[in-house]
Length: 73
Ligand code: FES
Image 1 (tube, protein in one colour):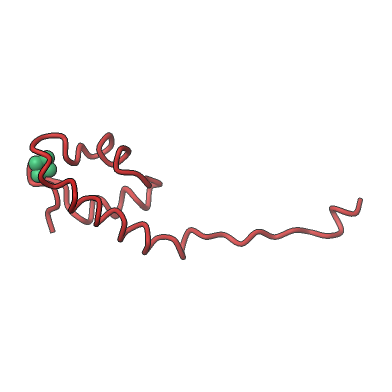
Image 2 (cartoon, protein in one colour):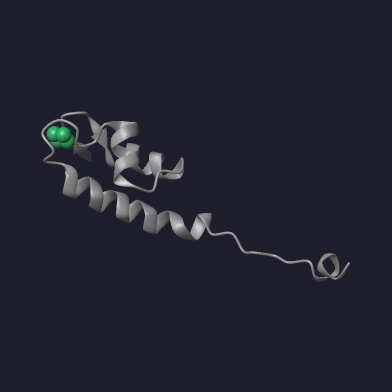
């Protein structure tokens, strides 16, 4: 699905940008120029970004592991 017609930005491109570490609309705007022309796509792009971040969270969450023997030394 095309999210930003003016700059030909698809949902797939936004998902890829999130996978590359983008978490904010301002970063998305800088990287893909989403919403930089007419601005009509802003709310849709924001919703897609939110959905992509929600989908990406379980995969990016890393457990914190402490080694007790290293802390005792
Ligand atoms: S549709 Fe995105 S700036 Fe126009």
